[in-house]
Length: 318
Image 1 (cartoon, rainbow, N blue to C red):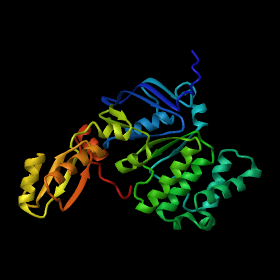
Image 2 (image 1 turned 90 degrees about the vertical axis):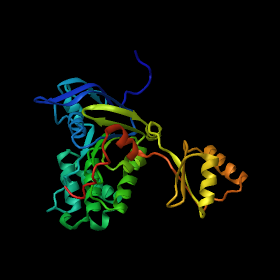
Image 3 (image 1 turned 120 degrees about the horizontal axis):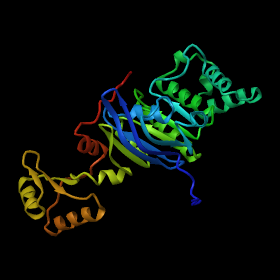
């Protein structure tokens, strides 16, 4: 039945994969709408990389139905390859060539018309802020420049779907944000991004939907805000100049008082209404806090709650 709705960029049902006795993916379901960013989170060994390898035709699944861009990955892998790009955590650039030469080589591999290869390279160098370094050997590039060139090379084939595996690992904060801006620009142009990352702030910042993978199963999926609401622990933290004020506030509001630093943690859902209610009650009792902060659960808390593990170590180099 034709509904008039475009097919999702990625549709996965019952995906299974084992290596010998080890079950890596145990029947996972995923749907990624076109023109969105979808992030797959999980501890090391959860099956993230295996999922990307199957979706990008590098590995065969043991079971399930997998369609990318409307094409069956198992039955028509060439059609899938023609519309995807893959940028892994290990850079695919040739460090002995210049940035321009890397792009021209990629254009050649994609059989782009000879007349447009140099124009395409120039456009991508400009778009990724690499024009000044275009004719410098890549071995002299910084980590952020190399990652931007790697992404530019992925775009030579004009992919509809891009798989980004740990795209900012090892980058400094400024370079990470530059890559984030490029990712957002790609999506605004209609590209679909499938992102795996261990930087939970990255998923929170970029993704419209997030799935948490644990022991080969999806244990939670939703928007970042929906996932955060799964986790209790939001509170307003009040600090008082004097101990009597702390005691009076604790009697009035409840919560958990810490006498040593004169703070009171009052449970909250993080809404403005809840915050205003606390402040109104304090004002009515003429109790003045010295400082106030609001803590709401973040994706780190979600990760810890759902997987039983702390946030994975951010590896600075691989």
